[in-house]
Image (cartoon, rainbow, N blue to C red):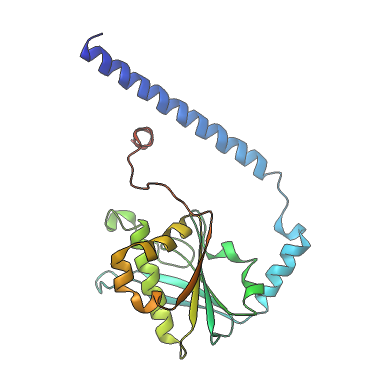
Length: 224
């Protein structure tokens, strides 16, 4: 077969693979929608209702802080604090994709009895700013960038407190990846040594552990 023939065949094969991937994705999403419709409401589980009520009895406040160092382009992140705000220990919670700080709503009530809890809304989620992606740099939502913004927000939060609490940082899914970047990125360790120096432990729930910047031809074709 000629070079031209091989290129055409390869392109056709790629298009077929992309179409098959799209069909599979649609099938999976359809199946998920059907399954979700059969799920019971959270209010039908006494244990979950009790946990949510426990959180509601704790003191709480929302702090919105600027998470960038660019005065002309501030980006505000919402930190939801549960507790009295003067405990010796603070548990910081970072949610994953397609979510917000409410991911942790069944956890905060019980934990806040022993420490203060700060649940973060990532940019574009919950009560944090929702900037247009086109107005930001290409890597604005990369794990390193999000880690930098969260650390900047925590620095502002700690500056508002009158004590010097220790921190434990927990992350779920992409939140786990962000937490890993806080400690794995040399520039972040240097720039936020004052914040990271307070951390005595991290907790990771199913952290994303993939090459996020790796080019996937099938996904690119689906996008285009």
